Length: 177
Image 1 (cartoon, rainbow, N blue to C red):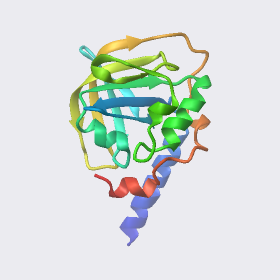
Image 2 (cartoon, helix red, strand yellow):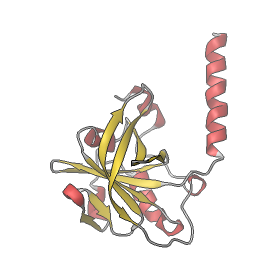
Image 3 (cartoon, rainbow, N blue to C red):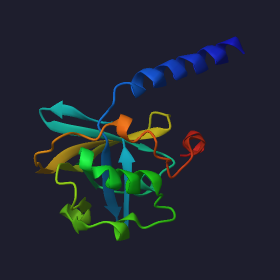
Image 4 (cartoon, rainbow, N blue to C red):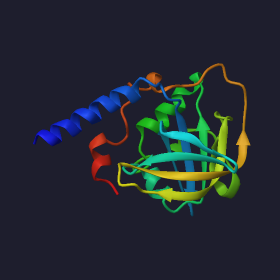
């Protein structure tokens, strides 16, 4: 029992530390067949320079994970401070029940991946690797195939969206996959 308490305390301290980093937020979109999906993510990072690579982590509880498991192309849209409405749409609604793309303006990109018109700062990439390390998120490593870049006055960070209620309860992530 003591060991479980130590693990829980370590996880709590880890989450508290990570929450202070104010990671930039992004919306990941993808498509598989006729099914589109997208979600708000805080776990993403450049993961290579030669060749360039970008990694995203998808919650196993999300509809985007289910579609993404079969998808080849993903778009990572980086959010500016003015993009909070986009963060709300993709962070509080679930694709299990709502077509988020009916509620925003988007354009089909490479291989039909939805590109959010309001978010021109993005990396579009082809899946190089899919890694499930046994946590509540799975990692998708992307090879960039298209880049969009525009000036932003500031990035939308984690601190600006902590009040949003996720479309899926955190407990669902523990049992998904």
